[in-house]
Image 1 (cartoon, rainbow, N blue to C red):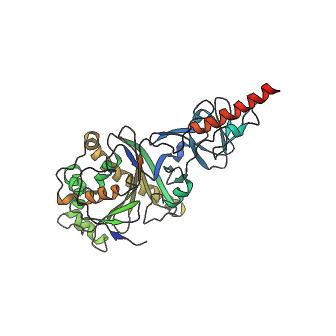
Image 2: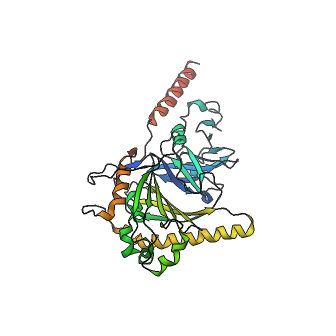
Image 3: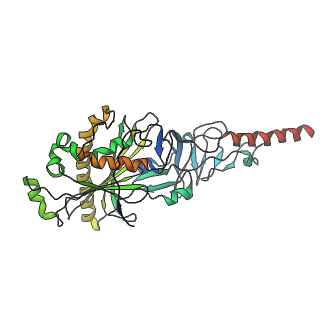
Length: 378
């Protein structure tokens, strides 16, 4: 994969994707922690769409539209049957591919073909989270990579700590600015500013969906913390870079050469213009009991560090009305991220299906009408 530098943006006004509550970026979004998906189906509202997610007998997770096409009962009140799911209202059974495969009612037991199929959605389970691709298309989803920890690699075995959810009344793109805004560290995170206050974040394109903001400034030596840590940075560059995926998920890598810390902050926009997020912390798995203990210690230390920054920014994002009317040179990383966001593929929010559900209903009514006429003739 060839990395190339991103050209600067010259215009900040009238953004079509960044901080636009009417759209969302096409891609992978977190749905719920894996630990919350046990025996009972779980209802999730994702990008304004209601889904049901359940785990089949094999352990594989599936995502379908939430409502049964029979009378609209929510599948979360139903039950799992093998790899299929049954509606809790009339016990109709739908396969993991969304097709009706059983109607217990004696008269219509052989009429499953008249039932409109339920939409299914591409799903991946990674880093202790369930992820859904908003295209609703398995082929498209296979072409888009999940957000990942670049240093660890997509296939690395990891120890992961998934912590509390966050709710903010502003857009994900705005929430994600805090990690690339070195200018605000001096006022909001004074303890961290001793190392990060002079960072020079340069933008690099990883692929169509992801941009990296990578620090190029040396370890500061004007205070005792910097002088103490400098020997642990072999290139004398403060390791701090952020990979932003789908303008909604941020992945942070930081720390001295002997121990890099990895944080992930997946977000998803709401139809009310806010953001639902979750915090995730990871490290590479170590062998043996002592290795497991060390890995657990590392993710908890990472959580403490991440929680420090999250708490500091909380009040800011509770009341912010983002409008960049007076940019300065230090805002260059933010401008780069805005430009990257504007290049993403977007869709209207709330997320809607391309094919209207009425088509399936018309088909069912037509079949039943023809059946009724045959009975009258007899």
